[in-house]
Amino acid sequence: MTEPKTIAVLCNYELLPERVGGMDYFFWQFDSKCVANGIQVHWFFPNQSDHGKYATLTVFESGYQSIENYFLSFCKTNAIVYTHIITHFIELCTPFFYKIKQFSAAKIIAVDHNPRPIHGYPLKKRIEKRIKGLLFSRYITVFVGVSDYTVNEIICDFGSHLKKKTLTIYNGVVLEGILERKNRSMLHPRFLTASHLRESKGIQDLIAAVALLPAEIKNTITIDLYGDGPYKSILVEKMKQHDVESCFTFMGSSPNLKALFSNYDYMLQPTHMECFSLSILESLAANVPVITTNVGGNEEVLVDGENGYIFKAKDIVALKDILEAIYLGHLRIETNTRTLVEDSFSLHSMVTNHLALVLPNKS
Image (tube, rainbow, N blue to C red):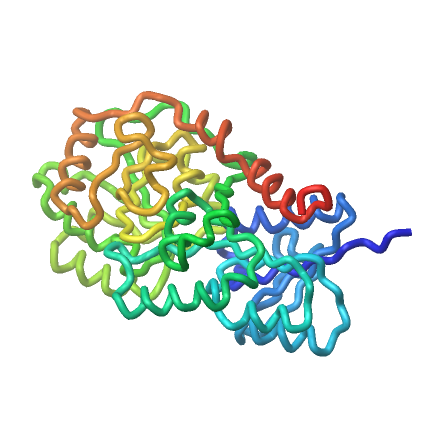
């Protein structure tokens, strides 16, 4: 009888019960599909948790130390033969991949979720990445980008010789549990943002844009901010400086955010950096259009005027103009935005495409 194959999945992704997102659902479903196909999965995370379906996964925790170093040490003390090693949220083309190949014949699949700076990396960083591409890309079997934008950035970062072993697998969302908004308010709509509170998410631009709105709008507009992070105190101070505290409400992190999107008419995402946003997909799946920037893979899912509005990152005046026009009913999205997600960005498709990389007839 053939021994079941075993694969390792390394994820520099903290498991948080209060923040259950699209990647959590992906990990759970991918594990389930692997088991159904006779594949055992060893998961390597910074920490342990039993929320959701993590109790059913075989998880090894690094104790918040380097996932890469922990995995190398684990392999030295455990005689496990992996057929595939998959990395998520792990830096690409580092000596780590060379070190794996010194003791393992596993095929290595590196998934890139990392956004790039709005103006690109500094020259020194670009040179370093190109050198790393020449030295260490040979040890990675397949590079996976979560959007075409990401694939192009991988090739730009590490060299055109990677074109033949780089592919796109779009992120997907589980539609179950995402309630669909039936009636969208055309006048005085409700807005939300959903993101980690850090500078690169651009919430400070939204605050500045709201400050430019006419007084009659500022007196009634409400924007709920979901998420938490180190930038919150700075955002609070900026609201005070612009005298727009009454326009915003901090809602904190929510473990069931996808069920809340349908309470709103539009989602705002003034981000400066993005690969391919699961929040955008979840919002669209709730039939809630998205107002966001022209960065990363945003324009691969959003069409300006059809399922949302696009503006140039950091263009505060453009954002203010969009907000004002929507609030007064001069701009409106009337199509059902859920259809696109159902057709092209389902979690089922994401899992199926990732599974194909480790199945025997797809290896």
